[in-house]
Each structure stands twice: as structure tokens, then as C-alpha cells.
Image (cartoon, rainbow over all chains, first blue to last red; front, side, top):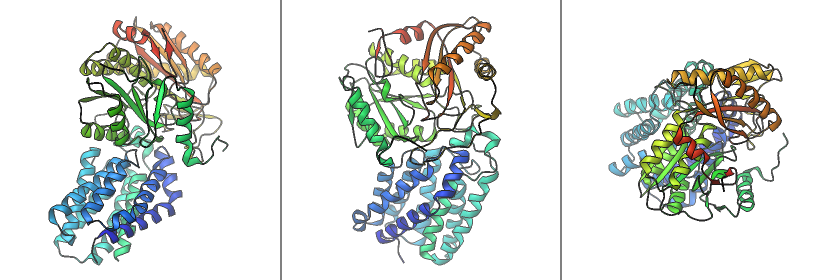
Length: 209
Length: 333
């Protein structure tokens, strides 16, 4: 299989599906420690990308990813908008440079995308954000790619890493994002952004498994 | 839940359109990207632009007009606007002296305005407002939230910009006003985001949320409902402690007291709060010489109120008193 615009469209559909299917989960997490808009914003973002499919179909992978980033930047808003947009634009840059979508390029692109989120959000692991999922997944992805694991092996492993990362946010005090005003009151609640990232990674990996 | 909506997805556009119709003598509305500007473009001044999630009306569009903002960018309900809105607004109001963004300190707003500033083809600067003393500050967190004190920052900076002052001077004044302003809110009920259709948080009839944010974010603690004077006393205490922590003397200081409604609390109760807050502050040696009571930074339909104290000096007082002509603030004309 290859990471072309058809795959990107399937991934967007799978993401839209999983976000909508987990409406109640995401809303209850966000009601607990956020401000109640995370599900709505994620749904708007996923739907927007799915609606771009005709336009994306004809594009090369890097151009498609960049276009998605620019579009998300002007449709999601909130904190998720610039962060997810940065992710796609960061990935596009590496794929353009390498001019292929080999497993090692995909791992490097994923890692570059996560890095742009880290820079834009000025956050890191352990701050109760989406990065508690994305950074471990990115590291694991790079390790597996370096070991020449197959796409199927990687797609089987990453959802587990994502789930561990998502669960790890439960016992953290938030130091970034809107839950950071809560102090210890945020303990015991999974971060909604970490949850949606875990769901998206799982949905995309399921396409490959 | 009963709300005045047609299709909930159109609530923002319908509301903005109504706002623009109601205030057509003062503002113009652009849709896609969404932003509002003054009817008459100002010249030879720094362009003052603010924006943020909707649901806090009259913040920010209600403060567009002579003496205050040049433009405002409304996001979806409680969701930051996107950089394309800020870019288009800046393009529309830019008058050769640069653009100053006034941004409430939330991760989403900060990042979207930051990306807009990076893409902007002219000079810009940003003032972050962070007057909410309910959030205990730390170098490691996103930091304090911008709440009703933002109105005072927008008023004073807007006034200074009107004199033709430089971008740097406008930013400096904005930061000074923010530093000298402290707020705290309390919720009696939750708010309901229209698209979510249910209250953002659960709170019983016998509870209050002390230190609530303007999006219904939890505050310092959940408390038992008490008589108003006791609640106001805790709020005033929190504000005075905040100024003490900032090493700003309140004893003998001249101040502006703003009692702000969060959306569903009647003016009658806001004045009752004002009455007690002013008495308590007087007892602590604070000389209240300016006041504002009403719904200026709301949280949709939340019942609750916030108290904001701004320590005045001659410069801030001059810019607070100067003429302003906007949909939501109008005096000195």
C-alpha cells in the first residue's frame, strides 16, 4: 500500500467516523476539564477534510497534506486548529523533501509533524495534552521504521502506544491548555485532545492492518 | 434546553448579521472570513484589532468604534477565530502605523493570533490580557486567563491610538493596564454551548463555582451557596491578595470597579454586588472613582458575575474618560 491521496481520503473518512462515533466520550471529557467545544471542533475539522476529497484526489501526497493543513487552519479554530494544521504542514515538508512515502519517510514526516506541534504549542510530554499521545507514538514509529518493521507491524503496534499515552494523561496535572487553570482538579480525567489523537491514530492504523 | 435558534449551525452568522443591522451606523460586517470593522475607516493611527470565541457579547464587536477597536474577529462559540480572519481584518483597517492585536490569554487564541502575526505583511504587536486572578500563575502553565479586564485594556489602548500614538506606546499602555487589573468570577449556574445542547458543567442549586472562567472552565473550588455579601467578600479578598502578590499597593489607590454580569444575572443583583464590593474596598482604603456595572464580558447564559478592579493612574484615567462611540460603550460625545 502507499500513502497517496486516496489513502489520505480514506484516512480522513475513518477519522471522521471515529470522532462522530465517540461524541459522548469526547464531550464528557471536555465537559470535565475543558470548555465543551472539542468534539464540535474536531467534527468540523474532519468533515472539512472529507469534503475536500475531489480536490485532494488529483494532488501529490505533500501538496494534499499541505492543503489540508491550510484548510484546517481556517476552519477549526481554537487550540486544535493551529496545532493540527502545523502537524499536516510539518509532514508535508518532509515528504516533499524526500519525494517518496517509504516507511522511513513516513516516520520522519510524522515526527516532524509532531515537532511542529510541540513548537507551536510550547508543550512537551507530561503536560496533559495531545503530545502525551503523539510524542511516544512518534518515537515508537521511528524505532520500528529503523528496525525495518513492515507497515502492518507498525500499524499493529502504534495504537497500543497511543492508548498508553492517552491513559497516562489521567493522572497528570495539566500545565498547558485550558485545563491548566484547574491544578489538582484535573487529576483523574483523561485529556480530551489526547483522547481524540488516540482515536485518530487507531482509525488510520486500522486501515493498514 | 430552550434557546432562540433556527439551525444551530447558523447561530453565529445570524447573530452577527443582526448585530451589524442594529449598529449599521457604527460597524460593517464581512462574512467568510468573518470580521467586523468600523463603518468609517480611521486614518493615521495604529489599527486596534481584537477577537476571540463568540458567546462573550458584547466582547469584542460591541467595542468597535471611535475611541476603541478598529476591528474584531469573532470565532465560533468559545472557539478562537482563525488566522485568515485576522489577516483580512488587518488588511481592511491597516493605516500605516501598524496593527495591535489585543488577545485574551488562552492557548487557542494565542496560537491563532501568533500565526496571523507571522503571516501579516505589516508591523504588528500583541497585548495579551490575563486579569483573571482565579488562576494561580506559574511559569509552567498557559497562565492566567483574560476576562472582563480586557474591556478596560481595549478602552484605554483604543483611546491612546486615537491620538496617533505609536504601536510601541499602545502596546506599553495595554500591558500596563493589564498589569494593574485583576478580576475574579463566580458562577451560580453553568452555561450551555448551543451546538452542544447541554450545560457545560453540572452544578447543584446549593453550589457555586468560585473563580469560574468565561467559558465555564472550573475555577478555584466548588463552594456551598451563601449570602451575597459573603461571596463578594471572598472575591474582593482574592483581588486584594492578587495585587499584594504583584506588589501593587491598593491602600490609598484610586481605582475603577467593574461588576460584570456573565449573561443571566439581572442588573439588580449586579448592583447589589457592586454595593458590597465598593463598601469592602473603601474599608481597605481603595478609592473607587470610576465604575461600570452591566454585561460587558459574558459567558453565554451563565448566571454569575465577575468583579474587576483596575488601579488607576493619571494616564489610565485620562484614557478611560476619553470619548468613546461603540455599540456597547458610549460616552463623552
